[in-house]
Image 1 (tube, rainbow, N blue to C red):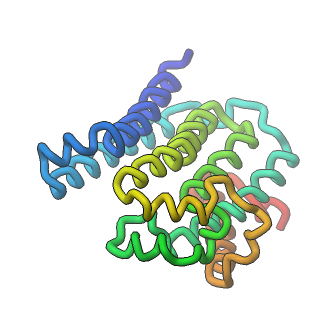
Image 2 (spheres, one colour):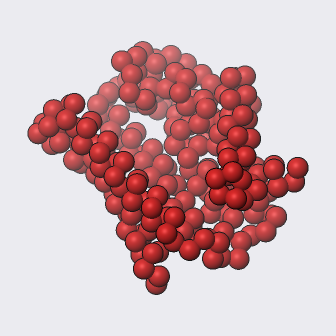
Image 3 (cartoon, rainbow, N blue to C red):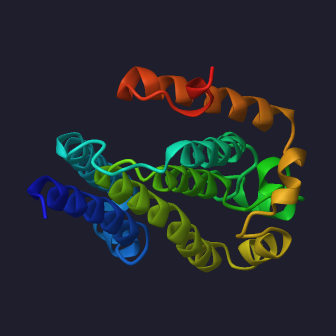
Length: 224
């Protein structure tokens, strides 16, 4: 196996593994040892350091070394990234999974916006984005990194449920009864005008940036 690919695999394992470890089994002992502020500094440092490793390892790995899935893959990827961006845009509105002092009050309210689809809209947005890159079958480096980010998002969402149950008790249990881990796609168009518009703008802008940054005409720009 190519040394650059091995380095990329190691980088992704480090990024995902340290994220899971620091978010779950190591969180309490690290907070106890470093304090809340110290933990945030350490968490941020390790996260950015390992993400930087992923970036530089990705750049060094061979590009476009797989045959690709052709127009069918591009159509599927383009379709997947639109709900991904809608969920991502809506994930910042009324979401008790985010660090906020209003979390318990939000769990008592009826789910609104993207939370009607899933209680983990940010994670599913990232998961769908990762899947869109997997179906393209474009390069080994993309497959490795997209798979890692998909695991981080969707396994991380399940682990987050367990952590929130421990931290918030009945408040999170109540929220789980009102919402769904798995997306309820029939509710996607009821998320509201702001997530739909913001998500569509992100969808188009991200595809345009793909051409500018990667030199690949992605999404709708392939056919315009």
